Image 1 (cartoon, rainbow, N blue to C red):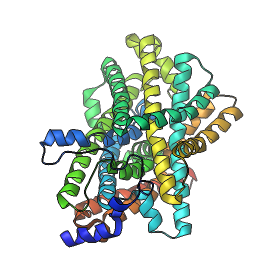
Image 2: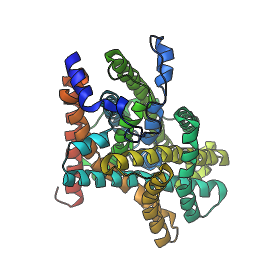
Image 3: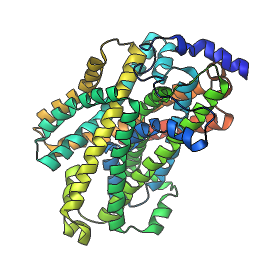
Length: 458
């Protein structure tokens, strides 16, 4: 085992001798010290942080529409999809973190190194499109939250979201731990808002528990399958796999020391699972809120503004309706959009550096990444004259596209983490390989089924 780890180190773990600009997210790579021979909780505290940056991608504004609409249309049935998606996310993110820790390279770097130019280029394009699809939800969600809170026109709000990338540049100067703390605070706001609103809605506990049990009707009902894939796409995010393999390297790890590597893998996995469990709770709350408040009503909840208005309308949600609930919803939406913006921008940098080795100043690189995502949304908004209904129509489609793009990130991830030449003794165990490949095959099959149904061939 030691020999295998040494061989992996010789191939990919020369990062101790690499310059910072060669390392993934070089300005923060290995910047956080961790204790050695310390107690469990003290060590865990040092490793806590990257998981919350990953988790925000699993509760971004794209989740809101798909999850709440799923509850409004099918009550608690799709909770089983949220549960299965979250378990898949925990498995994949632990693999992504392990890949970065053991090899010293992120998923984008390794994918580019192990593919020829045409294949690498195609995978890069798909990864960039996935980033754009993610940003569609974040940009639209943030812009609408700004309009709801401050009555600022939607197009102006979209422009503002393009500038918020500058906030990340300032935060990076404060240190990576500060970014983790700020994002954790925003996640806390989202959790508390929806926990409070679900508490007021008084959902059926029995219905919730039954909803976590999978049903076969999801596969045969076209609308239910479409929303299910939207939930999967919004829950298991392709860009988070690239980001997770990168930010797991922000902790200082001696890759020549087997105990150091094992400790980093163990505590990074615990951190990731804790934060993704919180994301699972938030996504469940979103669907439960949609089911408890809107199932069986004539009210449309397909848009953020619909949800905002409904929460203040007693004819829709009953006695719990109040302007405060609507404002809390908008605050949570803005928190979600801004926290997701931070991680989305970092993911864009990881993908761009890893696939095409783009070398430019950090501020220019982040601004370019953001503009690539903002531009199509802005063009769409101008074309439809700021029509929110048309713009929000992009949301569910963007989440389904993420589900379609996901296998192109999963397949390399599973392949690399199962390779004993790369991973040594840390290569995936048999049950992990079986579970990961099964999830990948099922996801590809579901996407194919949806396409056939959409084309009317099935």
